[in-house]
Every structure is written in structure tokens, then in C-alpha cells.
Image (cartoon, rainbow, N blue to C red; front, side):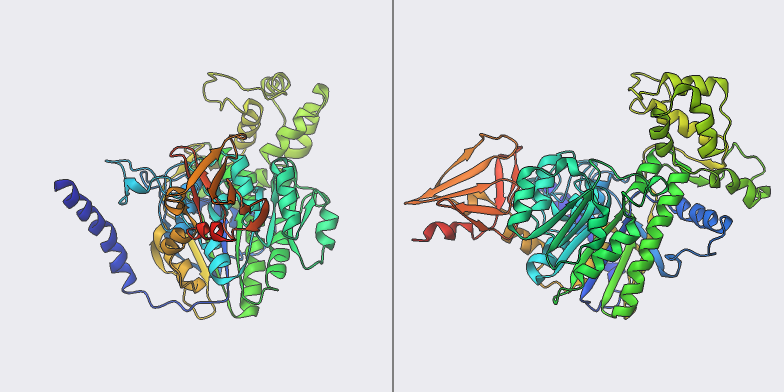
Length: 553
């Protein structure tokens, strides 16, 4: 009884602030198209630093995003104030905060640490996302633009479900079977033959590592364009004959999705602001955000012209404690813009880009090449270190050096030593993040919003009528309930992709995990949503009405 009372009190404590805030918020007019833009891991200091960088280098006084700032977001995991990318964007997409590693899936209870009420009986339940609801409930076109691998956390949060964001193969398969109209990203190493076959079967054109073909493509089919085996180079390091910019990809995605009569939902991620922050790479941070800002202009120009499009821009968490100002540069209020930006503006490559260059440079040319790209004269000790660690092999138990990148870390340190930027960590940080938005009728989220309230706004502005919990029940029911009373077995010939086999009379229904295809008596048909398998509870989550196929004669 006491436990039940405590749970009720927690529910009230969680809901009252939301209710109090929402009662002063005017109703949101739904629009035809919704664009969500996420510069991953962008702390507010990055925006300030990027703006001054642009000014110093002869650019405009303002960023394209500047007119649209509306407030902040309190973003967090279900059991921790500092969030990982997987649970934080998952909360935006599903309305439920989740734990580190979770991709659009209900979290485990963590008594004593949970920041929101968590029902233990729902652990591992896949949760329907805004993207899925837009496609399934409203028949909208859907797409994603990502500047790293398409199966990383943020895109996965929109179109896949798993308790472990590192499960690349099942996540990649789910995204392929989500039947996106557009996907522009990197990550060719996870484009399996099964994925190629499915894309071909549903009429999706696949372009791999061919920028010219990407730019020329004018067909009417769905389109995937995937570049590089793994990550894209950061914007400052990119060769435009090999890698399209996020600005270009956003423009092409919008133009293609806008052909849909029912409207569209698009998620654009400036993915590698986060990675530059993890590396404490100032040049990477600022130039990645400025590249993202140019994509913001593309989205806003379209939205204003279209008159029926809303744009929501927000990050998922802070990262690195980045500051404009450092103890290396005393006299903080006397520092000129030249002192702050002259050195970093001479960097022609990010620390990551320099690492790749140094690995391929003969030892006797390293000092000269380093000077060419950074205007830094290497000390004898630094030069010897770069020569010794060119292979970038992990250094176990190295004090103060991330074991996985000893070469890059030294390069980052050398470059940072001539700048006035500071960091508190190489990890995520828990401060509130910025919120910016545009709506043709001015119905934008204002003030401080939680990640759950952002989900509510996206739901309302998308004009959805089926709630996400209702859609979850429809497309992610447990197989034990869907096929209650019937005989079924699990085929684990391929343990990564098990299959559920159900029999009734002369009919045999096979449902492969992490796909959107059912096979009835050897004939494939479309499920319209992905079947998710969770090995932790040995459960398949699939459409609630699937058993009806077994009644066919």
C-alpha cells in the first residue's frame, strides 16, 4: 500500500509542473510538414564561439538560427540528469525518457534514481516514434539527413528500437525496413545484401559513394545516398567531390519529400558537433556548427516560402563544457577578437583531419606538413611523439590520454595550446540546451520545456490523431498475446536475426526479426511496421492484428 501511494505521489510530482506550464500555452495549429533539426552535443558556448569565429573571418554578424531562439530544454535520461544521445532524442521522439543506450524503447526501472515514473512491467517495450506515426498514421513522406553513420543513436531513435545503441546490424536493418522516402548519411559498411535486396524490392534507389550520381538524381523513387564506409569527414576536412555538405543534403531531402501530397517529416542531424566536442576540438566544433547553421537557412527559407511547415531546432545534450575563454589566456576581459580567433582561424583542418594526414605523412615531413595546415611549429618532443604514435594504437592505462586515440589527443592538445578555449570534460554535460523554432502562425514552444513537452509539441504540430501509446499497442504487441493459443517456435539459425514461426491448420506464418516483412506459406507481404525482437525477454513485438493472416484459406 505504501509503495502504491509513493508511486502515485511521484506521478503527481512529475505531472504537476507539466500541467502548470501547459495551461498557459496557447493551442498549436497543426501544419503539413515538420522539420526537426538536431546539432548533436551543441552546448550554448559553441554557438557563441561559432558566431565570433564567423565575424572574425569576415562573415555576417549573426547566425541564420539567431532570429528563431525561443527558450531552453531540460533534457535528461530516465534515471540521470546528464543524458546520452540515445535516450535523449528517444524522449523527443517517443515522449518517454530512457536510459543510456536505449533506442526508442521503454527503460528498465531504476528505483531510487528514476527521475520520472517507470513501470517495471513495460521494460524493453518498443515505443512508437513521431517519424513512425507520421508515416503510418498520416501516410506522410519521411526522411533523415545525418552527417555520420545512419545507424548511430540519433537517427536510430527516430526509426529503430533496441536496448543497446551499439547493436548496429539489427538497427541498420530496422531503419532500412522503416521504408524511409529519403536517407542521406554515411555508413556503407552496414549496407548488407539483405538491406540492398529490401531497398530494391520496395522501389528505393540506392546510391553509394557517388556524389555526382547523388547530385544528378532526379527520379521519382525513394532515395538512399550513403557515403563513406563509416564516418563522414568533418566539414572543414571534406572534399566536395567526395562528400556532400549537410546544407546540400538538407536541400535535396526537402525538395524530394515535398513532392508528397500528404506532407512530410524530416529529421536533420548535425551529428559531428558532438564528436568534435568529445575530442575537445575547437576548430571542429565551430565549423561543424556553422555548417549546420547553413542547413538551418535552407530549412527556414523553405518553411517561410511554403507557409505550411514548422521547424524545430534543438540539441539533445551538452558536451565537453566548452567555453570561450581559458586559464591559458589571462586577462580575459582584455582579450581582443584577434587574440581569441587568429590562431584557430589558421587551422585548415580539424584535429581529426590532421590525425588522418599525419598518419600518411613520411616522418621527415611531419613538421612541415603540420605547419602548413595549422601554422604551428612543433616542438622536438611533440614531433617525436607524433612519429612514435603514428599508428594511433590504443594506450592502456595512459594517464590523461584517451586510450583509443593517443595520436589525435596529442594533436588536439598541441592545437588547443595556442587557443583561448576551455573544456571541463571529454564527455556529455547536463546543462539545459537551446531551443529554436519557426511556425507559420507563430505557435512555437516558448520558455523552458522538458524533453517530454517537446514530444507533445511535435505530436500537436504534426496533427497526429492516434496517440503514440495507442500506435505502440497497434504495431508493437507481444507475440505471446498476438498468437495466444497457437503453436509457435523461434528459429535461431541466425541468432542475430531470429524468426518467429507460427502455425495454424495448413497455414505457416514466418516473421523475421528487425524486418517489416511477413511470410505466409512462402509468400512475402508487407507488415507496414518493423518486427522487433528483444532477447532479454525473448519477445517479438509486432502488429497486433497479425494473427488474422493465419485465417486465410
